[in-house]
Length: 142
Image 1 (cartoon, one colour):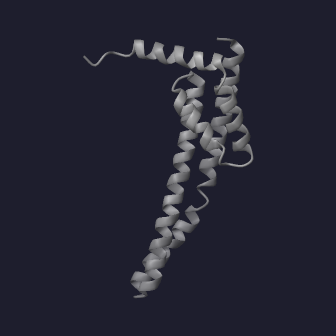
Image 2 (tube, helix red, strand yellow):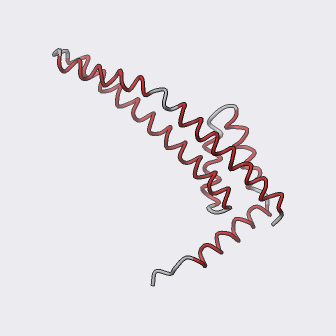
Image 3 (cartoon, rainbow, N blue to C red):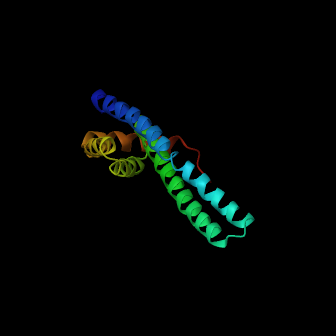
């Protein structure tokens, strides 16, 4: 358990927070399209143009799902950063780093660097020590 590993994980967590914010902001852009789809749906219903209403509803549904998936990825990256900070939940950190690889180019660089760092034996040991310490401190359910 070296301080260099802890420092590296701390810096990685900061970059995870930053990229989580950027991802969340990027997925706010489709809110304009969502508003257009809702307007088309309402306009089609009030003006008795069923095709416009159907297209607007489909557009709203697709764009809404895209926004939710994007914000979900941002939350996952944020949680991975939080767990990197506390050196807990190794699998969440691995999955968050893998999701980051989708976002070119900064996310890919950070995701690959995080994956390489997490594969180190000393980092794995640090995570396992912290996870076992947290399990020992938590109250038992019996």
